[in-house]
Length: 304
Length: 304
Image (cartoon, rainbow over all chains, first blue to last red; front, top):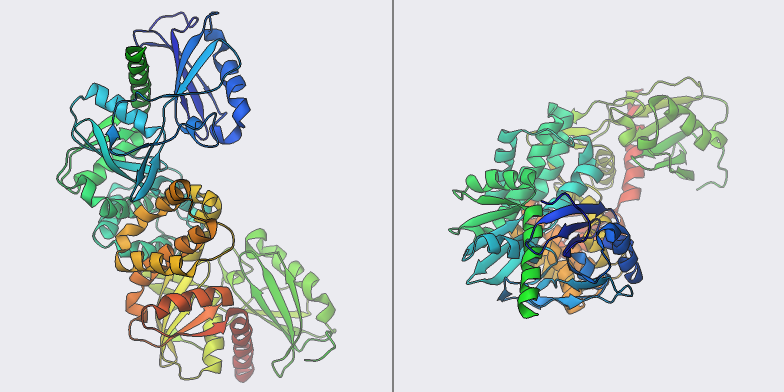
């Protein structure tokens, strides 16, 4: 890492729905500076992306034209420019980037397309970059990648292709139920109870139909039995992840599994999978995003 | 119905989490006037209930002490006064009312307790009054009452007792997912597609584990296939109610079923149950609340 944040060789950008993050990169693939903003894609009109990025990275621009590689919702229909989905099966490499229109000559912006699947219908934007980053460090990986988050993805990778994937709204459901439903009175914002998690996980993994019946019970157990909010939190997480594991069984059963995400989330999914005899490896989601952006930049260089 | 709204013989009150409704009643059980307010239990401190009710019904007070019968969350721990739960099995009649403290001599307030169940833990407040109202009009009813709403209840009634019940958060989940999740882009606030409802219902009723996988698909089908928001709305409803029917199967299978609720909701549940060979009757939820409050008033009179 250089101490000089000026004069980026190129800029890596992770531009999601609610956040924007940029790194000043060297051609050798080192991040020498980073900048973050809450100017997520959801807050911007198409013509606001360029000035927003210019404000964030102006100190890294040295006068010439700097290449920018961006991933995430910035390439959605409501983003800077639509980067049409690639359709599975498709290579895990990121070679088909989409140029974004710019007025300022100091930026040359290219966006990584998302990936879609027609049957069953599914989409991703951003995770394809983390997948490429993981494959760069683990060439020849053949198995299942699980990317837990707001919308958890289970992805089958084989022979350097994304074969199929499936999205679960587990993270968003957990957030809505614990913050905005009647369960907010019975679910703390932190704290944990590992036994309660495992018990709840087992209920819905083995009898997934019982999810609907067990949610309100979290409230009743607090009212009638004094169940703690930490236990409520772990039980809610276990119920939702158990239902997800039941539905995603065809992905993880008998396959090598790697988890990509925030460490607090991958550790919960690791614990859940270990109850099923699966021993996953874990990789940090932010590191995989940056590794994927570097892969995309290298693939561009090879084409130039 | 009398045209004179003054001088209530007694006052019936349905005081829920977010709304308050009162009726000016005659001893013969006729409602001669009604008043509504958004001063729900969630917005009030314990000492604010009496002045709130006095403001709402002041024009009905003729000088003497008027009996008031109230049901709903007004009897919760955070309400006017806690009306401790009755525990199942318990009679469908409403004889054990709890007096609420008052300063003004013109009101004599009694609150209908909720009902709880210890294993599995569950609670209700307000539905017990609708159940009593339904039994008043259908004496000897033996079977299943389903009360669809924010928190749908399935209730087994036999020999004039509530035997057991189970709560499902289906309505609250539908509201959160359609208004606050990523699915809000793909689910309209009205419109319907009866075929899509039935298809989605069948998916989760027969394979309840697939609920977790099918939710995000609603978003993907809109993005990739142009699925309409009306179809998205009906599919989301079908997925959630199908999962509920799968979990509540031991309630409705082979039993007479009566639905109590808002007509738009009971018609959806009727359609769902008819696909399973169950042909439920339906009763209006508001009418059953008032009928239950009248039952409670009559039971008080008999004890006096």
